[in-house]
Length: 465
Image (cartoon, rainbow, N blue to C red):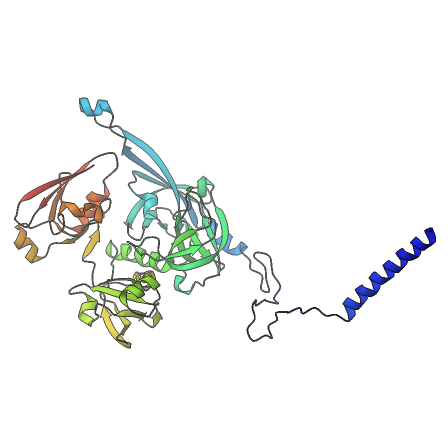
């Protein structure tokens, strides 16, 4: 009986082997391999070997760029004195609010051997005292030469007899997406910190209301990095680290820098003119995304659609029209509005740019002379104001002030448009510079009052709390 069972098991095992061999050698399953030889491959694969970060066929060396940059990046301390919140005692007894000292920190980049330093405007804003610490731990008092809030760039100067290490401005227009970069600064008061990443995007806008052009990178940037250097592997300055997008306040993968071409132009304007000379095209418009294209009834998805041309502007004088689609500026392709503003940010009033627009299916080239800024957006309120023309002064019976030409939707019901602001918190407003200064001093702890003149020549008062 045992012999029969053994023979049965041997036969069963032999049969299984035979069946398996038959399937292996004679029955072929219909496998479908995807290769690059197929006409329409489902998945395209690369045969190139993967490489660790910082390595490859031509290995990337960060050490020289890092050494060059850390000695040119400084630690900036900003001492400000601000009035604290109003207490019940202050309200009932008229006590003056006490000034509370606050210390903010950031970074800066030495751009000349005699001590000029570029940083962010928000790093030095409202400063009572500025102190700069070099990488060798030497401390200096710094003074503000000039600043521009719109571009968030400021120029500082320290007095020193020694020749300082400095960074040269690179050409940010030549920076490539995917290019390796280093971010150098002082995050969380950790001095001389170097992080690496790539250029993630260019001409990135962070606000639809203010389509400024930023370089986006994934190099780790945290509070304290503001004003620090973004450099390429040669150690050339291609950006000033400015902002992060985060729900926690710390780095989560996205950082933004003002391109070096814009920062350089701001610095040059401050040194030569004392303020920034902004050359304007004189249009309003937006990106041609699918929704906008559908609404406008056009098929094009690349370029800037002109929705309005400002009177007496360079665009108007050159014959640009509402409905035109800007495709190129100076032979450089324009895909979105932030690319246009980024390119023009490096220009000055009087510069001539060659603008190619598409109109009724045809490409038309116009030479446009850029004009001076005629209006500004006021801090805190978002009012758009302009200096008074001769006609305005005659109509309103005033010699000084600024005219409100646009207001945010939140203020639309107050009928502020086309009125003239002549005073803010008891300070006389002469022009746009005055208005920008006084509205920039508005804080969340106090209330602001301003006086306006309406079209009937009557004074009106408004209080913001």
